[in-house]
Structure formats: C-alpha cells, structure tokens
Length: 65
View 1 (tube, rainbow, N blue to C red):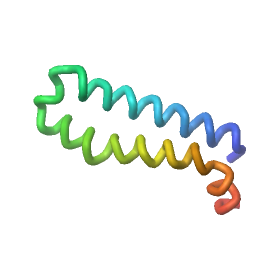
View 2: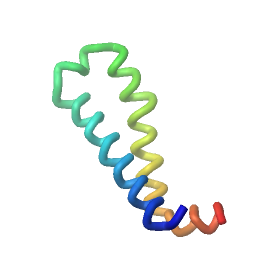
View 3: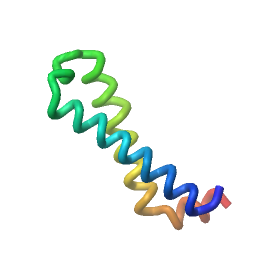
View 4: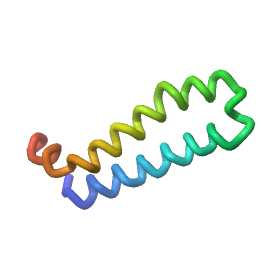
C-alpha cells in the first residue's frame, strides 16, 4: 500500500467515525442503548486509533515494510 493510499484510507475512516460520534452527541439516537454501546466501545476507539496512525504514519509504514 502506498503512503498516499494509506493516508487517504485513514483520513476517511477518521471522518466517518467522527460523523458517527457527532450523530451520537447531537441526535436523539443516543438514547438507544445499542447505538450508544457501538459508538462508545467500537467507533470512538477506532477514531482514536486512526488519529494516532495518521500522526505516526511514517513509523507505521517503516514497521510494515
């Protein structure tokens, strides 16, 4: 995977996860316990990991190569 493709994938993953977290915060769907659990235990950590991966992209790509 080229660095440009890797970064583009991480960026869109981060944007999609942010949209789900924003939906959780600003919509009535936060009252649904299933949506809350998925957001808090799957989407929020995914957003954090994608942010860390974008920050340390060079080290990650060196480790994978």
